[in-house]
Amino acid sequence: GSAENRLDEGLGGEIQIMSTLSTNELLGAVALQTALQYAPDRRLPLSKAFLVLPLLFDRSIRKILKDQRSAIVSCKDLILSHPEAFTTVSARFSDLSLTSLNTILLACEMGMTQLVNSEIVLEKVFFDDNKPARVGKTASDIMGAGPHLATLLREPAVDLYQTFRIAL
Image 1 (cartoon, helix red, strand yellow):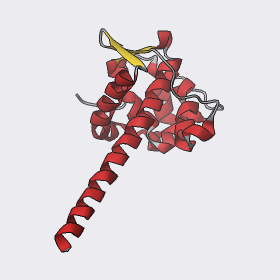
Image 2: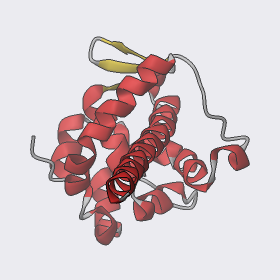
Image 3: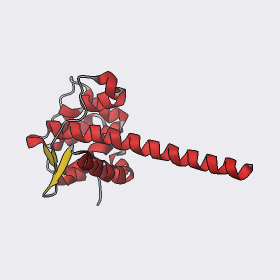
């Protein structure tokens, strides 16, 4: 009867939430791999790894970073050129911190990355940007933003957190 329907609806909601989480974490793994592929020695400190999702999960920032015509000089310069795109980085950092952590754990479990002395090191490439149809448009856009993201992430973590107004 009605109790069964409520149970089904409840489970449907939970399954929906679980699929959203896995989608975010899988896209997160794509974003993390991309950031690491372009990072020096294919490694990033955890402090910078936690900035990857807040930056690459935002459509307008992704679009700016993906644009090969953009000249990325510095983080501050980018914010001055596109202030509207970067106003919510701090809020997204908070909203996505658990997803970032889960993504890092997932990537380690998959054998894609390894945690070495508070740095994340890329061990194996799982997602191939030569097959964009296989990974989907969002993942393909994330991969396209990799080189410019790497330029941003070369700045000291302290400066990046201050520039994005992220208080820890």
